[in-house]
Image (cartoon, rainbow, N blue to C red; front, side, top):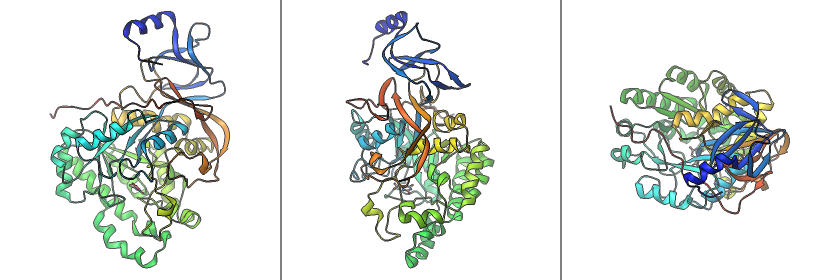
Length: 462
Ligand code: DOR
């Protein structure tokens, strides 16, 4: 499909000839599942309903027996470009995304160099142009060096907003000082994303694991108190400065209980790994491959995250795709870096949870499409509706597959879910009407991803 001018578009609509017709599937509409067809022209949905015999199309995709979900948006990935491309890059990262049914991503700023300036952001946009298989936006890192410029930076095209690390994880991005955090929060209006672990407490307690070298202690070192202290501090500062907040990868029962009391201003992300793994089993089985920040904790925390989903405390599921090479991961703990791949396995794992009865398909759509679109104000995304972008994750809820590392597109080439069988699998992935993946394989010669656009940029201060 090429760009069409207004005249051509009107002619096509009048002739009822679409670029793409998805027919026969069960479509997850905002009002619930419906057996309807969907057509799109110039990347947008133009008709919904029983369209057989009334619409023709350049491409017809038969979705009989499949579920058509609004495209999955993964609002936390680390694609490592520039500077760390031996771990991941934008092409491979977004290829993994579409193979896993993801149609849009927000990429994190702890690259090398860090994403702190307009030039850093532009360099990422330039690298993504023509190489990204799905739509994308990039976070700007919030730190002492750019705090006063963040109101301007967060409004740049292609910017997902500001991300702050309150505790050191990977890379040099850190803002743990209360005065610096206040300065960051005061300069900008958009929802600010934050990694909440308390740096001072992490430093104090590191000797514990340096002495033992035992990865099973990862969640003991980076304990619940470290996470809760930082979460409470930033929520208080956000209230004081009138800022909306997004707490990334919430990992503990205590934080869910606390955040439940702050939902008017604060949104919550959980990850598939915190929902699917628990300590100590994951560390015993996977060693440092299960090492993430914040850590995977005991079963009671996983149970609380699921309860948080049922209670509506959780707004989105993001993968925190954070690849490191197997050589790096096999360094002795705690020199082994924290992080695992996840963008490609997000949807398969979550469909597995749907099939196991842990959440409904409608709830999954809310957490992976409608939720990110709502809380970040992503233009034209997050629902299957007339005029919205034609982004679809078309899945077979009955397909049983075993996750294998040779399926993983990431440069790092591994997954902690190697050998796991799941029921429910992405079959076709559509990005603005382009069939990126058809029958589980890349269907295009060239990537078609574009920058995401946001509704609440350039909001004026009151
Ligand atoms: O485990 C993690 N790894 N958590 C983060 O927040 C950062 C990430 C990385 O970039 O490797």
